[in-house]
Image (cartoon, rainbow over all chains, first blue to last red):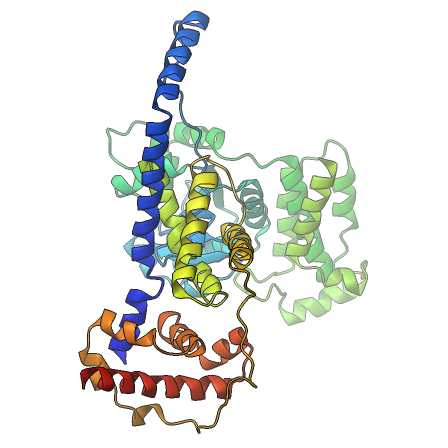
Length: 346
Length: 174
C-alpha cells in the first residue's frame, strides 16, 4: 500500500514538481518581458540617470528596495505572521499565526529544552510568553535573590502585518501578571528578519543579538543578565525597548482592578486614583500589586485565586461593588475593550 | 526572481500548497486542469503580490479567493459546472471488504508512474477517492463530506477501486 500511496504523492499535484514548473514559468516570463522591453528599459535608465544628475549629483542611484514579507514558514511548514523570541535564559522562539496565537515553539538552547512548553501551543502569544517566564522562574532559572535586575528580553518580528497590537498585548499581559515575580523586568524590542538571519549566522538568539547590537563587546555575545548588570547598558536598553505608554499602563491598572473586583475587593480607592489627573500610574500599579500580596494572592497558582480561608475573610471585610456580569470579565475581554476604545479614539 | 522574492514565494507556497491544491483538485474533473489552475494561481500571486511587494493580511484566504476566481474562469471557458456526485448515480451493491483481504504486492512491485497511469483508467469518482486517501491522507468521513456522499459509499468505492486497479494491472501484464 505504501507504494501506491507514494505513487499518488509523486504524481498527483506533487508539491515539488509543481513548484519547479511555477518558478520556471515566472522566470521565463521575466525573461520575455526583459527582451520585449529591453529598449524601453535602456531608455528609462538613461533618462533616470539624467534626471538624477540634474536634480542632485549625490542622489542615490540604487535606492533601497522597500520589501514587505508577508509571512514566514515555521520549521513544521505552517504559515506564521510573527516570531516572538523570549530570552530569559532559557531562550525560545514562538511562531505566531494571524490571530496572534502560538502555532509552534522552538527551544533555542539546552536550558529551554529542560522545560515543558508544548502545552503553550495554541495559546494567545501574550499568555504563552507569561507562562514561559513563569516556568523558567519556577524552575529556578531566574535568581530571585539577585540584587541586580532580573531581565527578560522579548524580541518581535512581524511579517506583513502591523505588529503593534501584538507588542501591546504582551506589554499589558506581563505588566499585569500576578504570577511573574515583581523583580523581573521585561523589555520588548522590535527586530527585523535581517536581524534574525544575522543572529542565526552568529548562532545566538535574537534577543542576545539585539542586545549586543547596542554595545561593542569585543565581538563576543553577552548574556542578558551580564548585559543589564552594567547600568549604562540598562539605560541603553530602556531607551531602545518599546515604551509602555500611559494608555497601556491604564489597561494594566484596569486588568488589576478588575481582578480585585472579581475577588470582591473594594477598589473605589484605586479607581479614584486612576481618575485623578497627575496620578503616578507606575506607582498605582505597584500599589495594586501590593494589595494582591497583602491578601495572599497565590502567586504560583494558575487558578488566579485566593487561599479559601482568606477569601472568606475578604468577603466579610469588603463589599461587592460590581454586578455578576462584570465579575465574569476575563483579562482578555478587558484588553479587547481597551483596544476598541483606543481605536475609536484614533 | 530575486533571491529574496524566491525565498518568500517558496515559504508561502510550501505553507499553502496542500490546502490550495486539494481545494482545486476536488472542484474540477481532470487532474491536468487542476494542475493548470493551481499553477495559474501561484504565478498570479507571484506576479501581483510578491513581485510588487504588496501586503496581504491572510495569505491562505487570499489564495483561496484567487482559486475561486480561477475556477469560475475555468467553468466559463469549458462551459462546465462544478463536479458533483450523487448516490443515485453511484450504484453501491458490494459490501465493504476488509482491507487486509486485498493483496497489493503486485502493485507494490510496480513503479510509481506505471501505477498512477493505471489509476487514470478508473472512473472519475474513484480517482478522486483514491487521491483523497493517498495524496491528501483524508479519512473516509472527510472524503464523504467533501464529495457530499455517504461514508459507506466512499468505503465501498474505495475498496472496489483498489480491486479494479489490481485487475487492470494483471490484464496489462497478460
